[in-house]
Amino acid sequence: MKSNIEDYRKDGFIDLDEYFLDNPSNFTYPYYIDGYDELNFWTRVKKKGDEKFIYVKPRDNEYVSSNYNVYSELIYEELLKQVGINTAKFDLATYDGNLATISDNVLENYSYNEFIINGSELLESRRYLTYDNDYDIEDLFDAVHEYCLAEYLDEDIENKCIEDIQKVCIADIFTLATDRKPTDLDFIVGKKENNEDTIELAPLCHNTYCLGSNFSEDEIYDMLENEDMLADRIDLCYSDTGIPEYKREEEYSYWEDTLYYLLNENEDNIFFAKECAENMDINKAIQEVEKKIDNKIPAEYKEFVRVAWDNRLQNICECIGLDYYKIIDNKCYEREMEEI
Image 1 (cartoon, rainbow, N blue to C red):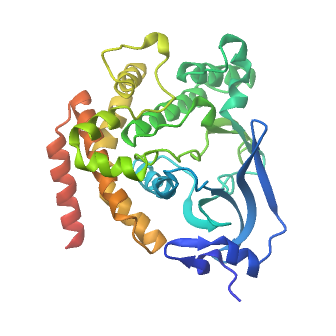
Image 2: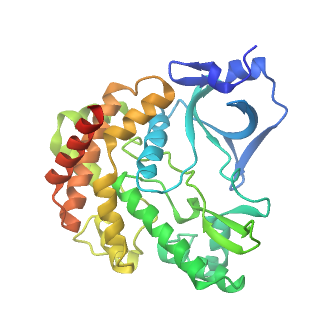
């Protein structure tokens, strides 16, 4: 009998129903958030010969974008890997008749004295300063600062954590992320193996809505046929972890305003933004995903992702003074050299 979940892959998706039928799991935990019972759950499986906990995130088939956002998480992972940002490791699955993604426990490579706190827990101390828990990125920076003061952590640890948050925000601008709130970021705290206290950004888990995966199939077809419509809709793609409302400049779109804000916050961010523009390669990311799942991403979504990515990349290059066409030519040349 097959025992590894990789052996249950069909047409790109790991069939968890068949796996659990052959390998019953006694370790299934529902995931609760904000008092609501989500479809998501933890379970223990055998993966590449080892027992692992994985997080299963089924999609509700009633949502029109559910067919695409399972792929977007995997492409997002590959893009961020290209610029050195850690995310959870995702794969495709089916469960109880629904498409799903699965991801490994992000703590498996950390010490036993380290644990995760959610951004909402970190921001709890600032609840009295905001209305209706409407936090912005500066609230998150301040919450990290207050945590470090309370735990007597070095300033270098605080600065590194805040810099990593800023990098994620910049990467989210490139990847058209639309649903990352300050409360969606997780942090690893506690003691490292050398017994030093820490707070650091955890590998990213909440990556569902990016790369246009929140659009319906009909919307994607319409945008592929209408360049002006695509440009307008892509310009509206931005993450909720952005510039505070009171600092907004209305002549800029929200993502552009957030980018300028981040560049002004830290002069090193311009170098990271340029690194993203030069090193993030959407075609390589797609190839890596198709290699992982041993199947093709749907052609219409793949075409849309490339067009949407190029639209945002070109706009960002204008913002930070890069030659978009030179970057594209360099990436084409690199791919040609790799094929030789």
